Image (cartoon, rainbow, N blue to C red; front, side, top):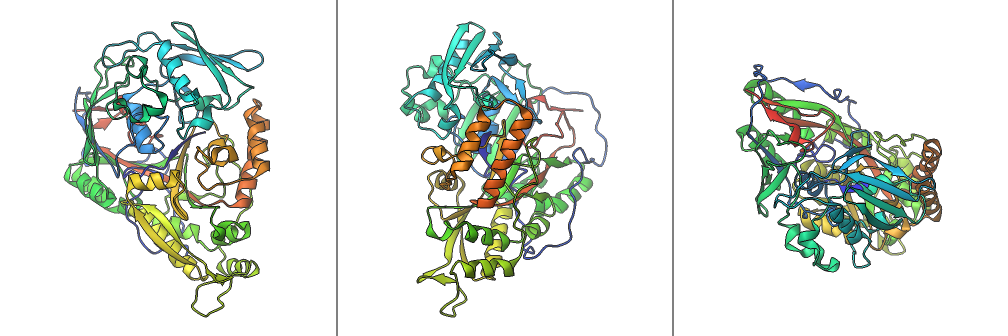
Length: 550
């Protein structure tokens, strides 16, 4: 399971819509998102003759963290990184492996401890140097180094060594059979000729992280932090020269401003926030300048994370009550404009391992109050706020700046919890600081989202081994969950894995370390004369396949 924080980016399907209606205290009329593939056509059909050139102008709420998957965790970072760098494989829409630098699928020894990957030999970096098997070995040895302290360290725990067999063959040796091997395959390959002399402990601060030399379909021409990134196509890209000449990524820390620029042409492609959808649909019809792709499903879910080191959240009954006090369907209907489905545990509905057979805590404010009273939380002084042993039930909830949908959702949650005697202080935090606070556990509660790809094993978030340096930032500990995660990682039988992963989901749902909210669907706007957009993909994924027509 390759994890990316739901991007603090304005354009994202899953999590980000921009501003929202604040009408979600109770469930409204349930609406259904249109099926994937539905489009709002432009006023007049453009001719379909393919042209060479043109520019995509996209926008995110905040800058990427840098050009290495080993240190960056936001979806903004990964999407831009994928344009500039290459990896052995990409993930398909079905979470299978699509070869990138690799040729064909990995092959295994009989005992499943050795995996061999063949690579192409015609790929080059934009400085003219070839991408080699030595680069692949170098990259994975960075991840295996004891000096690597990045957030992905746990992903590589079962990898014993990586060796070059010949110029086109790499052998991966595992400590034991590792069913989640696909999670290792999508990391960008680092150039040894540039970074080979850089100490691993200093690599995340190397100039390369901000000024990369990659082998992807585009290359970074300029990055003015807080303003824009300008990418130009890699004329010698081994996958074929992209038709779109330039991709400009603007940094605009307010989603409503992005929608305004979409209508003025200063941005010409974007994910459309739920609260702006009606306006943008009307603009598409009247202007003929853009068209919309609706109902794009995602492997994303949004949640409220409870920091389990805080005494307020250490009783799972209390956490269950918090979930029951939040009208999640109301948030989907009123804040997300119906574009999403409620989730009850940590596996997105798009995954093959998804199960509905987990404990559920439906909206019931009165029952939530009763559970809290049983746990000792009562309003003993008549100030409308629950208290216990002299401590008030009050806490801060962080949300990333510029994502108006999330900000509104947090306000709705604040109102709903207030009704049962809990005081929530929303805190809107700038995007990069928000990500840092999450990763360093500097929060009481936080409204966030995961964009999940790759294998469904959830070790990266939920195993106790991931607390110190990984992404288990709520400090969740359940020995049975640890045991099942470890067992699943050594199981190659799909049916058995589905059973194990279902048990993991059920235990996590019971514990409610997050209040799992919903998995959104998304709408993307793009120029009326643009073709090649994959209706199963959101944002800038596969932009190298897009082209303008005349």
